[in-house]
Image 1 (cartoon, helix red, strand yellow):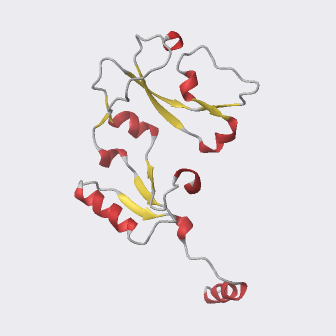
Image 2 (spheres, rainbow, N blue to C red; image 1 turned 90 degrees about the vertical axis):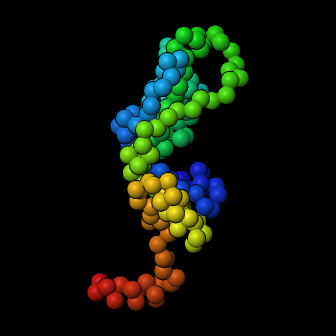
Image 3 (spheres, rainbow, N blue to C red; image 1 turned 180 degrees about the vertical axis):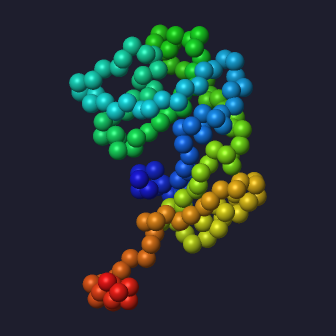
Length: 158
C-alpha cells in the first residue's frame, strides 16, 4: 500500500473509524448531503450500476478490492446526477469538529527519511493534536544474512 499511495518517501497513513468520521463531520451545508459509503468492487466487463445515481461514485474495479475503501460523497440531492452532465464546480470544504477526536493514530511510511517522523510529531504538537505518531512496523531492521539471523535467534533463546 505504501508503494501505491505513498509515492513520496515521506508520507503518512491516518487511522480513524467510520463512526468517528460520522461523529466529527460538521454538517454546515443545507445544500449538500453527505454520505459515507462502502465502495462496491465490480468486474466492469459483466457488472452494471444499480439504480442509485450515487453508485458510479462509490464503485471501483474488482482489482482494487483489497483496499476495503470507504468514500465520503457530498452531493446536492436537488440535482439530477444522471442527467446533469459534467460538473465543473470546485469541491466543497467539509468541516471537522475535532481532529484529535477524529484521528486514532498517524503511521509514518517505512521509507521515510529519519527526520520526517519528528516533523510530523512537531506539527501535531503545534496544532494541539494529541495523536500517537509511530513509524510503520514494516521499517523494522532486517537481518542481513542467514548467520546473523541464527545469531539473533540464539540470543533470544530460540
